[in-house]
Image (tube, rainbow, N blue to C red):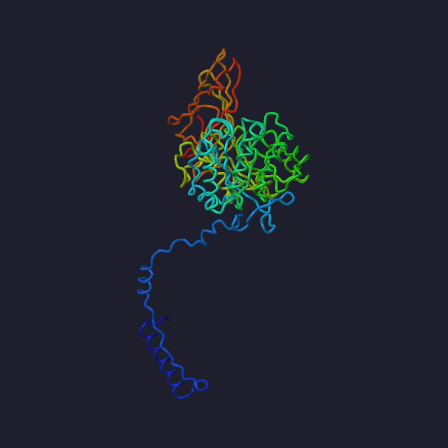
Length: 501
């Protein structure tokens, strides 16, 4: 049974009157003469109207902090140092850095902006940015690059990362110059300036040689490192310094057998690309750590070692599981829209911040999901045993057809779902059946519905409705009679499933 408001008010007033009567007659406790006030009835309409007039509040700083809680940051963990094989914070707690590397800042300078770094920090939970400054190649610091402009870009990158409470790696990115001793004097001058500039910074790490290669030995690297570390230590005694290892940062076992002992706070870098480097390199990494070597994965990708080949998410997930188990820090390659499968942005993306779902490549989507934890739902366990089953794709398996002078064999290497849209990664093998050698080739891949090309490698790609047209690159166009071309691959999206004719 319910009572209307008028009856309720009468009952309230009667009750209050009785209370007042008892007070006046001395029926209350002791000599209590406190006034009893009738409670005011707040009008619902007035409350709603009052609330509507209140200005909308901006998100509190605490709410922003909540988005990035649980990840290491300079404001929480302070200056980092190395204990045993671990990277640790100012209070001795183990710290794991996870983030992204720029591509060469000489070629992709516009991504060094605070809004870009903010998005990766707040939305992706990245807590480190690596600033890759190439030393050779066109535009390199030690070749024809503008040294002052490059140093200004590095300093801007440190400023923006610091503003977002992120750690930042200054990367002396040797590559085609192979041996770091080639530009020893330039390196000493550069790191003298940078260590002096960031003498008091608590978030700056120094990577002193990206990928020694082409026969550069560990002794070459070690002698170079001891000189550069000495330069940095003269200005900044507590900096964590990352030292590259031979063979594109894979021979960590050589460093483990003969580590640098004259300085502390040193870590040794290992790089991997998941579609190329699998169990052998993982075993080598584990053995080096078990021998006492502190390892930092300052660069990795989920494609092959070219940076522009097939993607292997299953192997990438195994790497992540192992790095997390050992609390190893890892930084993904690369923040750019370069037309290669390791870039996290599609080549069609012209933005330098404020990226949306439509702007990310397959590598970018995987990286975001992994950093934010969404990968657990999307990919399951590292070995794939609990992985979500790929979206149903018609016509899975191997296909063979003739296209011009080439016999084309295709296979689906991977398939998944992006926002309800099926995505598939294909690999092709082409065989020259023309009866003569050729200097170039072109093939058509026909589908049963219109497709969208997300990525492609080792060929020039164009889409016309339901057909994907591929032509040779200058380095793989020559095919002898009966010869084959391998490692042609692409990633496509289709609305209702993807099926070859």
